[in-house]
Image 1 (tube, helix red, strand yellow):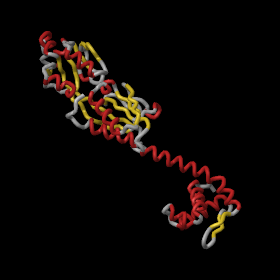
Image 2 (cartoon, helix red, strand yellow):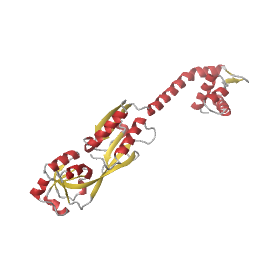
Image 3 (tube, helix red, strand yellow):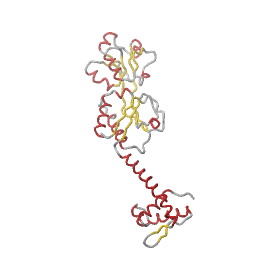
Image 4 (cartoon, helix red, strand yellow):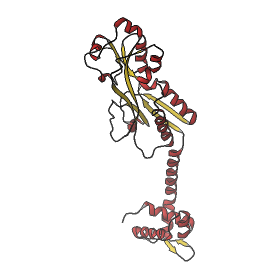
Amino acid sequence: MKVSMDDLYLFVLTVRHGGISAAAKAYSLQRSKVSRRLQELEKALGSQLLIRTTRHIELTENGRLLYEQVNQPLTMANQAVNLLENRQKELQGVLRIAVPAALITSSMFAELIDKYAVRFPNVLLEIQHCQESIDLKRDNIDLQLLPNTLKVINEDYVQQTLLPFPCCLVASPDYIATHGAPKDLANLMDHRILVSRYNSTALADGLTIRLCSDDLRLIHHMAKSAHGIALLPTILVREAVTAGELVNVLSGERFPEIKLTLIYPSREYLPEKTRAMIQLLRDTFTNDSVTL
């Protein structure tokens, strides 16, 4: 018969507390359950371990031998379990996050990291620049943010869609003055286009792509510098449009949204430092008043 580790632990507790009743009370267990499990342990070992009397228990020779052999290892194992449980609760250690260039250069993400660092000063943040889905467990990464256009390589990971970013076409007044404004999507063939690889498939094939970059800030700058017509998230160009630095092009057209996907290995056994970051990401990227 196989020996249960739980039964061994109950045996150790019983010896430590000097009796079945005391051990049961200390660990909020029924006395009858402890007694039954000890009997099963003796049966599995084929040896009597305890001499039960009315007031207390005594160890048999075999019981003393067993206690001496298992007491210290079980104590160390219990301490290890407690250590891991406490680490799960503590807001300290290293938190590793993988994000694309489009986000890592944004003011919104910088403000989010600043908030987290202020709230949890004992957590060391490691931010990695990553453009593709990675195996989080193998690469020892806690969280990843990716545009939803990119496939997650491990479908078992938790995936949560955050704030969607509607996109629009914009150009500088100088570019429009020089090249004219397109009347419809077909007219885009006559213009230089600035896109990110996350939304490049939203436009027709055969366009003259002047710039394709993962860095939305660079595309934004090139558009303001009259290098072409850019397809960008609306919230990124809102201030520039209001200031007259950019103008909307083909404003009646609708383009696919860029959505951010938050990815992490499991909902279970999440350390508190990770839970805190997930909640902050949700709070930040579900508020449509924020700007990149």
